[in-house]
Length: 95
Image (cartoon, rainbow, N blue to C red; front, side, top):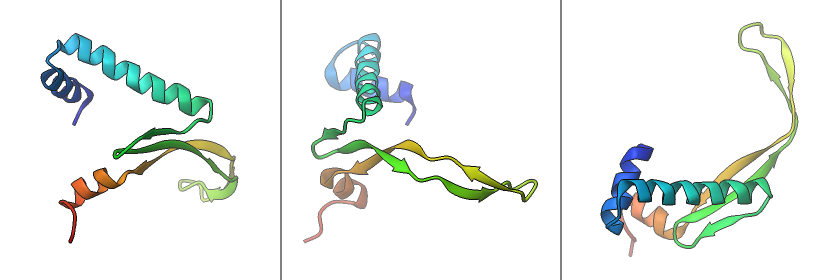
């Protein structure tokens, strides 16, 4: 699903214009981004959690030249799906 398709879905479900839905989606994504920049965790109960993980520095190999190179340590965004999302994707709850 593209961003435009998601905006149309939000607009239809909320009964608002696509412009308003686009602004709302932008605000949500900006809020998540700003929280992650600060190192905060964002939890949407039932959907999942966004967070930041630290990756250690490591050695790699340039695939073209086969020369070794150093990959620096860095922070990366991570997402962990919540139970409701996991259940919806796998086709519902098992009994």
